[in-house]
Amino acid sequence: MTRFISIIFLAGLCLPVHSQETFMRTLKLMGSRYEISVVAGSQDEGDRYIDLAVEEISRIEKSISSWDPDSQTSQINRNAGIGPVKVDAELFGLVERALQISKITDGAFDISYAAMDRIWVFDGSLQQMPDEETIRQSVAKVGYENVVLDKAEQTIFLQLPGMKIGFGAIGKGYSADRAKALLMEAGVAGGMINASGDLNCWGEKHDGTPWMVGITNPLNKNKVFGWFPIQNSAVVTSGDYEKFVVLNGKRYAHIIDPRTGYPSSGLASVSIFAPRAELADALATSVFVMGIEAGINLIDQLKGIECIVVDDQGKVYDSKNIERNEHEMEIAGWQK
Ligand code: ADP
Ligand code: MG
Image (cartoon, rainbow, N blue to C red; front, side, top):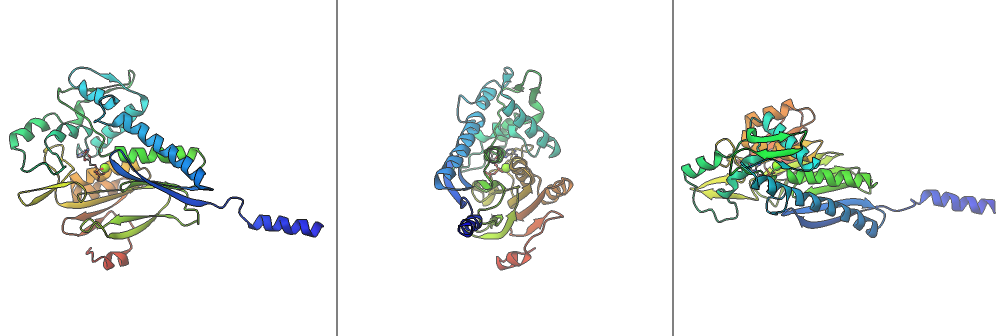
């Protein structure tokens, strides 16, 4: 009898109590394709976790959307040149951090770029270059120095009439960070939140292997030019292959230089590796505007952050400490 019991006991030790699996859902949130993966013991449990993440991302979208007239962001924009708007601590913090990035990038990153989204439209309707005067007038309403924060009152004021802020270059990354934090709190052992190439992950897949991120070959978006294992960190890619416009034979990305008012050109993609997706998202956009030399120089000065930049000729550049799989790059026909 004792022997029988101990055999059962041993068998029990060998079998995992719950066998874990990785569950994934793809859906559209914040106007982008999100892929949410979690490690869970059953489909039901996985669904519950993914629902939590979806709720969190939708909640953030409500606050930062410039399309929704009821969002806090729209209220700030409506009151440009009129008066400060009281916002919740979360939005205040996001704007505060965005302004810090504007400072370290000398204004290459600027959430007040949004005053220009009336003239640079990347939905295919833009047929010719906006004229210089129009660009000059709208760039006059861009400038992070005119975003005034009052910490004590928790208000945000856009000083110039016609100013506007938008979170297109930082919101997806922020949402990935928040969804990750929430699921970790809920006890999810591993997962990945991928917002169209802006991603953050934690733990491992159910089989103990690390999460892998593939960086798209910007010159052929159906091909991946490198796979990287990532651990408890974020990777964000900004590319000109999703949204762009060709005017007079020149290709312009949907990333605008807030200082000139013209879209940036010359780079095909920028990938940033960082501890948090919010920062990576903002820096990917920044490097796009700053260009190869100044951009990589900035990344080299930031601890724990690396980047890979591809120019429009397919030439690859990277930051000091990155380890790339040279072999795979060769297969994809890349030149260093
Ligand atoms: P992706 O769309 O590939 O995620 P980004 O994260 O770089 O690319 O975000 C680009 C979006 O950010 C643009 O569509 C626009 O909404 C906004 N944006 C464009 N230029 C700037 C800029 N210089 N600073 C901040 N936001 C910008
Ligand atoms: Mg970005």
